[in-house]
Length: 578
Image 1 (cartoon, one colour):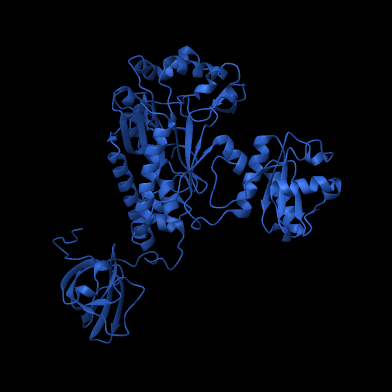
Image 2: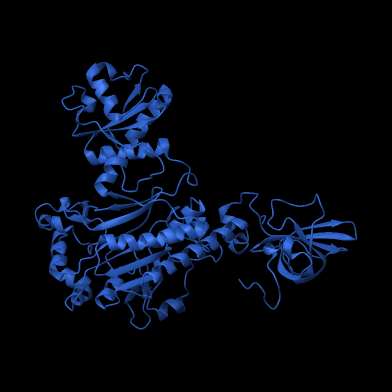
């Protein structure tokens, strides 16, 4: 890396013992200033690469966060004064001449990571906040990850293509931001919630392998892992099946992980949606710990215990949980009820292999032994069981599994997992119509096509999600490329031919000109980088994020437009405008 510019010869944090005797010119911000009488001063100078101590003969007129240029000679620090906590701790810059480039007011909070500062204050002064080592590290890690992923895609023959930011309204489920047209008053563009249709059209156009580091916008409520604006690695490829897409995306996320942490992750697991729900109670499994769900339904078939009479009885073993007191057990029961369960049965495994439980006396010794054997529980463990329909019982226990066993965010391995074969429809709406689980352009599983008209909720899709430590990083699918199949899915969704033509006519029309089989994926870069950085909130890896209310404390956005600007756009202020 060429560090030199017209104003500096080196970066502060790059100086080492082998540079002793070298004359350098440095530029940066004053982190600390210490004066020893009138004849000696120390200035800790900081830039994005780190900090170095500069020694000035005499006093120096430079205060905290002033921007200065320093000229001097690198030398080893006197024995006993080295600082092992600094990369530059063996050296200092001596005989320094300091030139002030810009004065600064005292910052609104310390520009280091020693003290916690209110997030609102940080966001209001984000340009100061980003000087902090934590934010510098996060944003530069993000740049490395994106660079590595982009290189991985290019290395696999993908072509980067930019798709429009001014787009047409699309029915992908999320609320869109509307942009009024000045030239066509009363008409609107929308900001894309994804390049989904555009990239499918690129496949029809013969681009074959497309990718883009795409900016997308969704007008949804904000939370720790969601912003109005987000960035994704967007991918589409032709003449492929699911395996081809999974391999291409895996190569990109492995490259991004290695760029961030210095080594690739372990094997990327594969689970079908059915297996994921069966074993972990969720389609976003955290594989850093075990505690897999157990099916107790066969063992309890015909039981006379009413609390356990249900189509499905699932359980999870909490290792060592037998030591929990009654208050903690009651809290777990209330937690299960809050999650929608009718109740929660608990069984402590005794030293003799029996079960200590309020329900224990209602179960025979043979049933108790079968429960212990089936669950593979050991003495001192706690067995938690939920009875109900399969999906709900698994879901409740999946959440209890996380409550009891999930490691903190930054601990444990980085465990990637592909979840495949999602249901094509996630349920019925209030009018009894199937609801698309991903989007209406997802190709059904070829074995289930004949179920579209007879049993749509049983149809599997060729859709897949990528999960990291329990966080969904993105989703994708093989797309429908045949008009007849697309029409059948629209029929299942009760979208009439007239409505389909009005909403998707340009896509359906493109299919008539020869659409190749194709599929794609999108990786959420904000979430991915947050996980790699060990951050719980994606705002910590975004340079200028919005708050949870959708505002920008730094700029004051959103702001009302004046009457003149609204008039040009053919708009009028609503009744709530100020």
